[in-house]
Length: 397
Image 1 (cartoon, rainbow, N blue to C red):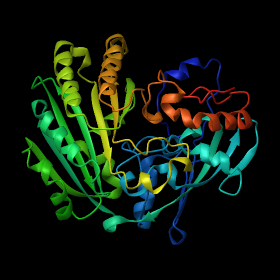
Image 2 (image 1 turned 120 degrees about the horizontal axis):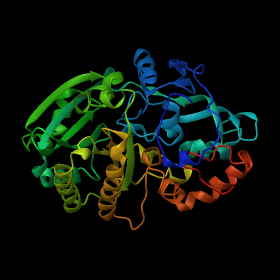
Image 3 (image 1 turned 90 degrees about the horizontal axis):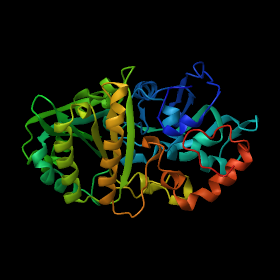
């Protein structure tokens, strides 16, 4: 157990397992002159951003500051600065780990290079990672970013999705867009919050997001925040609530390879009707992440096991529960919502970012059919007994 990242129903297969405490591997060392950062296996995103802010550096970090940074990176890792630098795993240079065969090894471009390829987005499958070294980058805009939060009523969703669609293919690399779609029980309506992060000066960022501002949001907040506080600030700081202990939720997710305005409007309309009729669904919400392709396309699809370089939007359904008993209702609702999103995804088959997955999708959906052969060969070599086969496993042993 490290920083903690991800939840999957595949963990339900584990019986009489061991939980290994990684708490002592909790260091962040930044070599600013060499643009390198080495972390222990249990650090969180907040640990990383705080250390990098002091050093005048940055790296992509996930939307949620409290989760384990190692877990995020081993599944790929996406976040507001992915438009600049790609997935977190794209910046991974070397790893120290204990494999499923009990060997303590260093993995890099020179040692076990094929395993380094697999650790970049399928890294849960091969052993215990104790130390990771990443490439880091000079801070953009002196480590400051524009944070804009805009609230729209659900009946404006078509116009909002149309603006999002207008950014496809020409989204500035500095701009990250997050949509949070949730039901407001007081107003008895769905509200859509757009969280817009621009890694640059506020005045410049405001010009970039003008198409959203032209829609006249009912609530608007624009401010400048330090890099380390981005995830705490975006969407009016709502992520802080999700980091509180004791939350129970059911995740579902789907990758969208296009923005189908009509399909997304239908999803919002479905949320409005279904949640209004069932109060047990009121804590569930949909988040959609839209990052510029520039950072992902700095690397080729064959460079790592990461399979999301052509994704236009990463959709995440967060089925938070008021009570564990609500799962009986929330689970099929969330699955239905995923199916509705899939219909407009632009792909016949379901594809899911592994860190957001439910666990029912299967390895083809998590890793892509074209990568499974290499990943399963690595599995047979480094974890032939399948000791690390309980979290979204590649299979093959």
